[in-house]
Amino acid sequence: MERGLRLENVRLSLAGRELLSVDASVSPGEVLTIMGPSGSGKSTLLAFAAGFLEPAFSAAGRIILDGMDVTHLPPERRRIGLLFQDPMLFPHLSVAGNLLFGVPPGVPDRRARAAAALEQAGLEGFGTRDPATLSGGQKARVALMRLLLSEPSAVLLDEPFSKLDATLKGDVRSYVFDRLRERKLPGLLVTHDEADAAAAGGPIIRI
Image 1: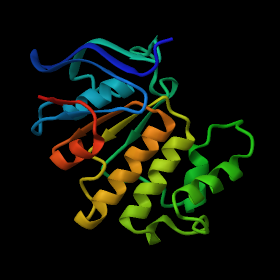
Image 2: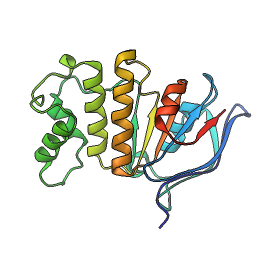
Image 3: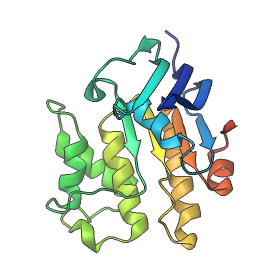
Image 4: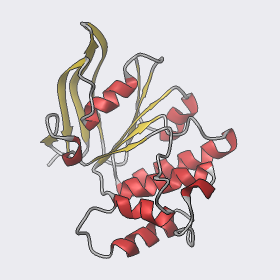
């Protein structure tokens, strides 16, 4: 089985106008960065890969994950995780509750897994906290650990560092990319920031 994420001859169009064309493979632990101006279709590419493409757009090509064509599968069956600009933590759940939400149903020792994830994120003892009391960097780490607990086979990153303070960006970037490398997960990053692309350390496609 071929491991990794493949964007096979993907072409996205809006009202008959082609936005982008990408043919690329992302190996396990590698991050492919897509750079381009606003409106160039970067986030639309992530939506197509994740299965959330708006009906106004048309798409051609295939999304292959670990050798399987997932192009027509519903989002929940693709095993593709998403990390956004906002951490999108559930305000009605504690930090531990947010992490538990990420653990698939039926997985044994769910609470132990969530506790281990908190410890790995350097947030041991934060489980009962309200997410609103966390710093921006702490929220970003919780969001990433929640995503990893869902056991994705690939991760899409939609400008996830753009709203962080400049002092936090470097640390959070390193944390995210180190975790993807550790887990050998292929990543697809869209960003305007050259520093993001440099930190990702993988190939770059400019559109």
